[in-house]
Length: 261
Image 1 (tube, rainbow, N blue to C red):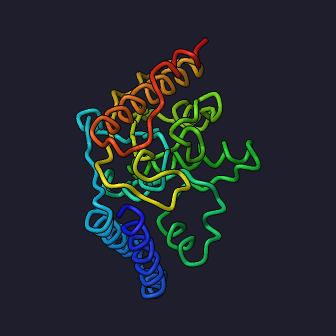
Image 2: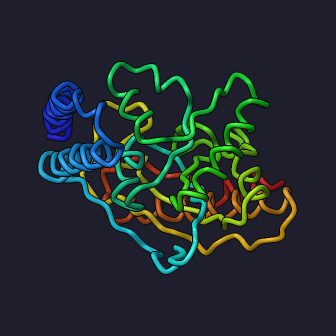
Image 3: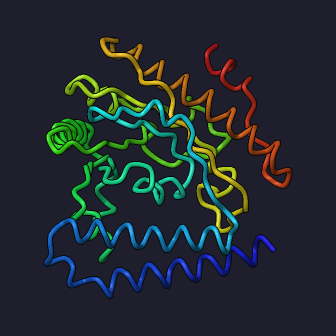
């Protein structure tokens, strides 16, 4: 049944995505707000398909940790494409730090560019850091939250931070703006694997953790971010396994201890 649901979802997903990209081509000539509306429409369609075909939904925890009076940086764990499809549900009008290559995807890349994201060239570290800092300052002026995936790519649920280390882009933004860092832990990879065709039913948990305090040096910021995200994400994956026995076995907290040795 999971395989059948996954096949049906993938067919509907690509049909819907192709239709939206082609039907709304004239919107490229219109203001950015129109593209934002179209993006939300598309994401709403995808969420409908997830709930009604895959029986997959999500829950948000820790909303009290999101600032309501200032701009902020969200440093999120990245296990799946699922969370990228929920960013506008979570934040309204966020900007996302992503690899520049995505802008080369026909039509889809044009939509991304129109949304005003922070695109970086990962092959050139110096230029990437420059783009991140300039983008962060621009978004601070616009009052839009910034979402960055500190490990730079989707990470399998059993991969450790040693195998996929945290990168310095988050700290760069932290140092060049007065925005706090809000860690976002999740367990999406338990249901929608990094490169998996099949998607499993259940409930993905997004949990916002307390902000990382200001005034820390680079090493302390990196350690605080890594420790909090890894520990809480593993806890959420263990919770998912307890609620849905058919899921893959998650990593154990022992991995964190081993990683620190």
